[in-house]
Length: 565
Image (cartoon, rainbow, N blue to C red; front, side):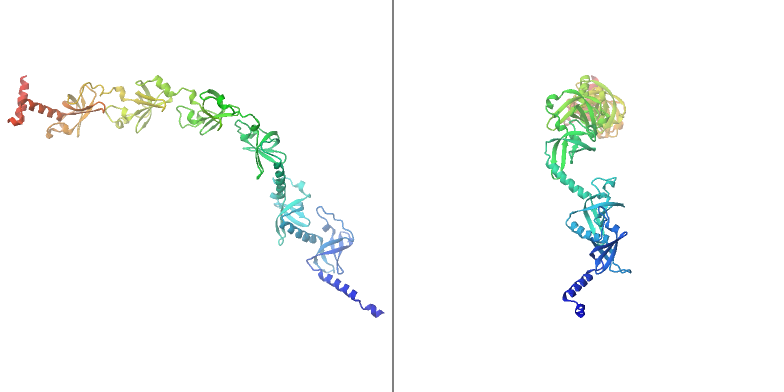
């Protein structure tokens, strides 16, 4: 009997074999289930099977949002670091078991792009640490919230969802984001809110923020932009002129972009449009007053009434001040009188004129100084084509080169004048439309051609030598103001006598007029032509060369006859 009892049955052997397999299944670096067999002070004794026990500190069972209570009989999972130490016990860890378990779950969540729950429990350089049910993750400061958060204390120790951004099991690194979760939640809320709104709807909102270009209005969980141009029909320099932070305002939804969830709002759309019927209220050529609201490089804006502004273009500011910045003519907030030049209701534009409120200085000049009037002014500028003379009311007149002198070329005469000289001139023409005044200086001395009397071609005249030159003589026709030049080859019939040095300045001589054209203003005289004419006349009266008489005989006879008379 005793022998039979000592021999194990087939069933007993199978049980022993299974137990042996279980023992062999326990290996270092694995997670196994164990049973709490005792609680000793601050540790729990856990049987992991195969008559192997290990000790785990009770604090390892604690953690954020976890109860540290553990009692004898509880079944827990632990991580086996070593199967047996010097005391014959297994070295096990509840923390590492939980971490291993968490990593498996987190990897699945990361692959599926699912959110995970965690708790912020500490602050570190550049961010915070988050407990993800045993696994520790890093939360960068930039990923805490949509907007920068100064105090994270209210978020510490609170279970909340996170999105895993990065995982590296080999290095044990996990990076999470709370901001991504908030943005997704916010996007879902915005989509729901936007779905309940429609363009044209009038709604109350609260001003949350003010910028240079407008204000953001909270419409109950979603923001809309109230642009500065939609705050009022009048010009608004800064949104703070119309709204303040925290103010409740009634706005109209102008536009909704369902893709970007951007909402455009307006206040002025709730008010009557002042541009309706604008042409009737502001007829062209009407004169009225307004206040300068803004000055730019190209002109100035003038408020005619709240919500209605017109532009004075720089070209319409002054009759005489050209290429001057508008700020040098008028100033902001100044009240000015203007004239309506054009009204375009469709484009919402009104063109104004400032200079039109004053008399056109060219019209005033023409009225006061008709053609032929003598005026006086200062030489403002010299150009290649004439002089500019400053006249009254800041207008300029121009003396063309051809109107400087009757006899000398204008290119020579203009050198006699310099900037700042005060000169007298005659008004030749005033073109009000082109804003041009033509003046003449030579006209003050009279036109020598007009005063030349009955002078005509073929007439014999007496000339006074003004200057002797190599090429001929500069002479003045006696009893006129006409001057002309006798070329060397016109000084005598005989070539030997065609020498300018035969004459002297001041000497008087007779010559024959060979050309006189009043229209072309041209006169020429010739001594040679006179001598040839006298010779022909003598030949006609006293014979010809064919009769056998020489030219000397004929001229001698003519002279003797003339002497007897």
